Image (cartoon, rainbow, N blue to C red; front, side):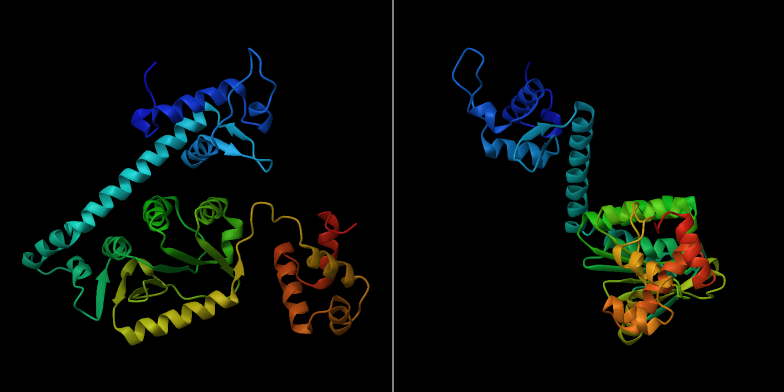
Length: 334
């Protein structure tokens, strides 16, 4: 039969083991300890099973048994792994040979233009005119990012075009292990497209929070360069590329304050309230004062009111009475 999976990075032993798992269903401990007989099977080597799990073509359950991933998913996982390794190799080679830097040098001989300012890394503050120049600068900054990418999106909503542009950039950062933190405006909760995209990024390691307060638009890379809009009301006009250390540090401080005031992005199963939210909703019907409710919960009044404010935003309630009614309608209260 040969080794048909070799081109996907699977050696003969690994392929033979995977095919055996497909026939037998799993590597349950009993498979290697059954009484000798014509139908008995030799035990699997744990190290070999671990390799299959690492390749993504098998899974191990809590009891230690390894099961084969269905062939379509297994091949898909192998293709993804091959592409990931190839991309890492190519990016590493491009960096080793300074390909990007050598191409940027060509601009030194080009006539000055608003767009060419994007590459003028020697300037402390550079004006970038137009959305294309801004995207070009983002491409450059993120390509060289090594540690951290901080981003805010005050509107909370991304267009399909914007997602298409940012998706490969963000995935490249996450693959390289760059820490990515994003703050989105609260409108994200009413936009399924943006919400789905953010949850995808979170599944790959990004950290996303939602702000219910006005936030400033900023992108900061490695705490050494930042982009802010020339006109916050019309971001398509262009941006300022800031490399001056003092200004960048100030923008990082601003981002950290916005981050602390924001809330975690709720997961897909976040429609139901948490335990403490259930208790607070129940106390709305029993306690007439915040101080009393907070004392019964064992938290400060400030913490109680913060949780209550979050609940009211989630329910879209204008007041506490409406919050209790809406919670009852949604089945949050028995």
